[in-house]
Length: 134
Image 1 (cartoon, rainbow, N blue to C red):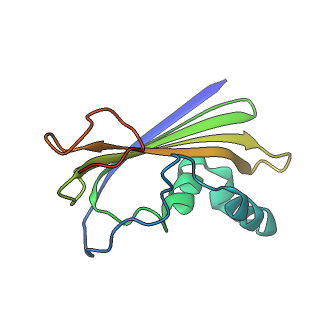
Image 2 (cartoon, rainbow, N blue to C red):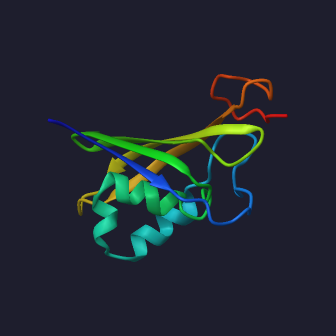
């Protein structure tokens, strides 16, 4: 059985603080988040999109149009988060891809998380890449 859930949310930008915690490698650390998730028993741990939003909250505070799509098949799941229309003069959009595994208790564990960005036209690459924009 495959379950797909997609949502789109527009977030108002209220701060000019830049995004933090996005390593140049394109890989996001997941161990500390997984340790935290294992130490609690919360409803968000059993919902792909809520878990992704919880994981990305400290990293992604930019406004813009946010689209979240989660898909699960058996004990594996994937979540894709696209934030477009960022209030940055170089970066147009940022995308996050999470791969997850369901634990025995029904909660999800993040196996890997990657990020990439697309630059505004004339400010760098137009494909999603962890490479910086200019």
